[in-house]
Amino acid sequence: MSVLHRRLVYCGAVATVLALMVGLQRLSQPDHPTAATPTAATLSNTSAFMTASRADRNAQIHAGAQSEPLKLGPLPASLQGAEPRVAFTTDEQGNLVPEHDLLILFDFYLSALGDEPLDVLLSRIQQALGDQLEGQAQAQAQDLLNRYVDYRLALEDIEGSTASATANGMTPVSSLRERFQHMTALRQELFSQAEIEAFFELDNVQDEYILERLTIEQDPYLNDQQRQQAIASLDQTLPEEIHALRQRVTRDADVYAITESMQRAGAGRNEIYNLRAEKLGHTAAANLDELDQQREVWHQRLSDYARERNAIRSESGLSRTDREAAVNALIEERFSELEGKRVRALDAEL
Image: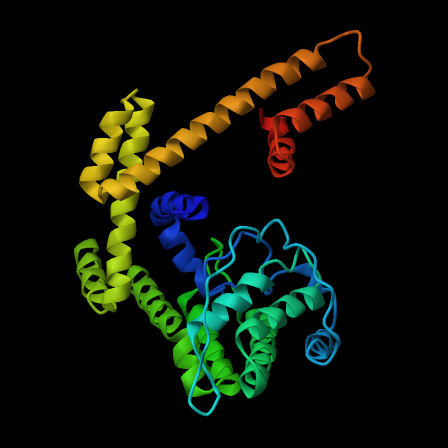
């Protein structure tokens, strides 16, 4: 299991705490990426798009398909180590088969729009498509990319026309439902039925579920018992895939909360391992135990660095410039280039 995967295991535990908050906001935000992507600025909210006119942005997007490929350097730091493993399919006639992996690829690169210009990211996507596709399938994938970016841009207009909030800052269900209807109509305008089913079917189910749950929760004519019963009945309508995911995330979050409490109380490593193994299985317990050890080593390295950094800063015989140079030298000595960036970002909190 990769380091990234192990981190996602931990993040899954935290997800339950945030799940309802995120769910309630999904429909009030520009459409979310369909795959787990790095936490960089998304296409729908980045200033690089917002500063240009709609016509200028569309011209930039579609020019990418006709221009010479750019010379591409290393991936942005936000994407390194997280490259998705995707595979594309063609039919017997050589036509591209719409599959969710295409959106995973698009969203992966477009999530780094705050780190690289759009034309560079489009070239990266074109290169990735060309690695697996050729001929008419590659042209169809490029056309799909153009339509998908058009879709993300058009969502900005929908957000602007439907955004509203009550006095307490909550978006009314009616506004969220209106946005969902506009979003559905936009998908039908830009994509074929096969593409909609491949790309957005699960999103549609989740969005409809959220709308129904919000309607129940905000119904003033239901008492607490009736509301709980209605939500329980609604949960039974979820597809097995989502239902199983919700159960797994809830379980993982419970285990995470328990182990956090045990660690604060001074529980031993074996005791925590046994609990995780009982709830999650031995493989997951071993992976989480390894992650715990990595975190302990990292925190110890940070602690050692902070102690030496403080000693440098307290040295009265050094000028401010000399102290800063000595701290930088210490970081370069103790950490890799990527780790050094993390240390500098955390330095004010250490």
